[in-house]
Structures are given as structure tokens and as C-alpha cells.
Image 1 (cartoon, one colour):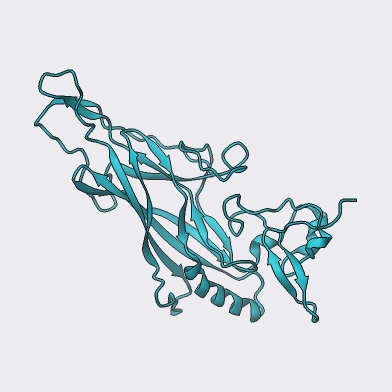
Image 2 (cartoon, rainbow, N blue to C red):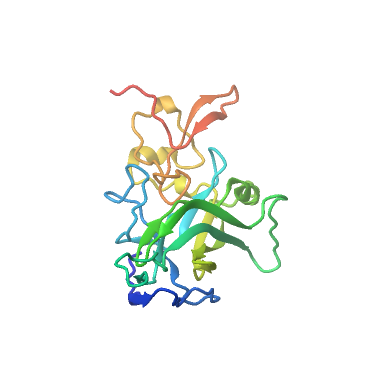
Length: 285
């Protein structure tokens, strides 16, 4: 999705020492605070896909929802790439007639992201997280100073493997009951948190739905030679010479088509040691 926003910046101020004016230093529920999660960054060609690096300024395209495939491989998780903006303008002055500037007052020291997960099911159907793994938690970040008008990007695990475990059990049961590619919506609410001077500051909520599914990213391959390997089929790694379906560059289990392979098989023909994404081990013709 491509989205455009016009975001006003607070004007720059120069004030005498001893005078302090707080600009949007307080937290206002669901309203402007001076701190904003602008968008989920899009990692594509030329925007960090090759190195799993998230650009520090806004990508032209943003992702407004996610997909997480819980079938095969290691316990899945979901990574958000939020772009965080300090909406405040410069706010500094001069020290007692000196030409030495005082400390910038509108630097925000980033602290963490607060995440809340809600699984959306049919009316009357309940969903419980496992003991010791709540659906509401904080994700700490390396302390980072965000200057007035500045932006930073982060990689934030908004659905952890321990959150995925009950989702996997639910979706696997649906699949075993005969439903093809079962899925469930996980509504995620994320807030950036930090400090502005001596006050806490947090962003309004950033709402980001994630569709958790069982096998949906492992089917529908445009390459006809890969169609035979659509889920639940698993090719042998030795049968593959290339893999154009590597999933997301930072986390294979999300958002992009994924091809897995089995490094070994048991006597009953069950795939073992599944690698996601597939690491081709076949000889090139």
C-alpha cells in the first residue's frame, strides 16, 4: 500500500536559560504526543532487502498488514519494521548571554515498544495464550536518541514464538479437520515509548493486523516448476538447484512466498530436517 501523510512539525524556539516550555511532553490517549509510528517499512529491491537493513527514512511503499505462516520449520514469529518520528521542532536557547547553546530540550530518548495482541475469532469462540506468555508485553530497544524532526527505524518482534505456539495448535487442528490453508486474524496494537526530559512519552496506537495461516505462503508459486511443491508437498533439498522463494529477508515465515525442503526422510517417507527457506543441494545441470 502506498500512503501519503502531511505531518506538522512544532516550530523551533530559542528561549532564555531558566525558562522551560514543554511541547507535547504529556501522554494523551490516542492523540498527538510528539512521538509517532508512521508506518511499517517495506523491504524491497533497493530498500534493505539484500542485507535485512531497515531504512531510517520512510520507504515509498508501506505494508499495512502482515501474513505469518506457522507451518514447517522453526517456531514462527512476526517482525514489524516501524518508522518512528519525533514530531517536535528544535527547542533550545543560549546559556546566560553566552554563545554556548544549552542542551536541546526536544530530544526523545527511545525506550521500548508496547505490544498488545488480540486474536479475532468467531463470536463465542475463546482463545487463550499459554501460561507465562502474555498477549501484552514490552519489547526493549537499544537506547537511542531521536532528535527533533528526526526518524528512526527498528526491527520489533510483535508476535513471539511463544505466542505462535497456541496459534499453531489452533490452525493445525483446523487443517487436520480438513480445512485448506486455515487462518486467523491477530490484531496487533503497537506504541513507541520513551522519555522527553523528565517525562514519559508514548505514541498513539499503531494498528497492524497479522493474518496467521497454515501453509498459505507455501503455495501459489508463479514458477511452474515449483507448483509441484505447493504445500503440503515438501521437495528434497537434493532435488532443488535454485530457490526463488526465500520469504521475507529478515524473517522467512512472513509476508512473501516461501519454499522449504527436507534434508532427510524417514522409512515411512515423512520429511525430516525441514529447511525454511530451502537450501538447494542438487547438482546444477
